Image (tube, rainbow, N blue to C red):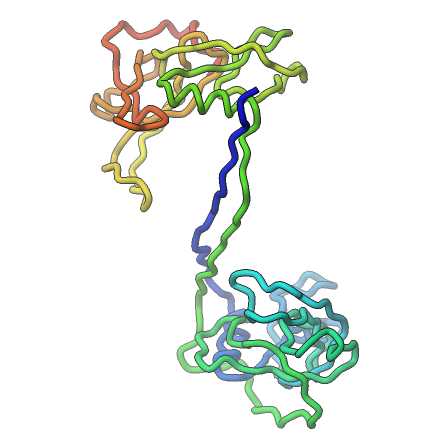
Length: 313
């Protein structure tokens, strides 16, 4: 059996969101070294603030300042910090109920070791030197035995309030396509497309999945399909992707390769975008050293009859 492929993959994108009045006041307050919560219907001050009451589900906007000092309610030691975490040396994740708050805030505690951390210990915020209006304006918490400082009297009204944030989202993982798709990818390296036939319903799956999702049985009979196929349906792309050097508009289509039981994705080229149609017969175009077709182009054959591909729409 050939070796199953695997590779490290990263999914990463900037997540942009606008802020309502409550979250805007909270993050702007952090920029100004002020912590604001919001009072709920049961009298508790929620920190971080919520926009809707957890009891009544009604909108709440009664902002309340709380102290930058508080008490650890629970904790866990982080022996090996990961990329993007608040500290680069071992630290404790802590839930801290700030003085004046009725709920706890999750953040990092800078401590020399787990023996220095305990439930009930007093801590205070260590502010970041450069603050932009984000939760990272709290660099971390640190042990503190002094009294709570005086509040500033902030009401949530600030100059130049923060109205939106961009939060980077990232997922690192090792992906393995499994036996069936490893064979599919290896075949593409030889400019061939292979699927697997279900022994029960006889449908040929491309790309293969290792099992038939309809019958629930394993598939291992390899079947070479294509290289030509039929456009079953398509869309016209008018927004340019940052990571694709393709001029818009272009057409992205579902293509049923000859012999396949379902359609796969592919870009259509070699024809004006407004002349692409259902039933168009196409063939793959490869570039030097590529592991998959760059795009599909018309073959010049007559269009396929609708009845030959209607089950794959």
